[in-house]
Length: 66
Image (cartoon, rainbow, N blue to C red):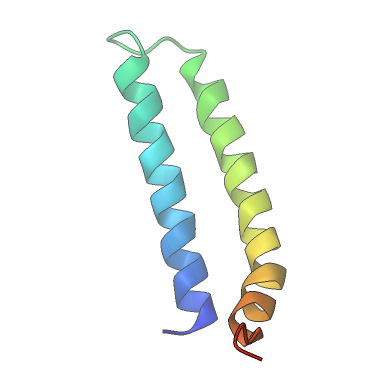
């Protein structure tokens, strides 16, 4: 599996997973402040995406048996 595909799967699962977790803990209907939570999760997801673009290729190229 390519690095880009792994990063995209991680990007989507991180966002959807945390939105679901936060939504389950929110009141129904969700308050307007929930939009700030979505924004924060989006920012954290973007930071993780940028980090993985640099980290994942180095991690996969590393040979632990040498």
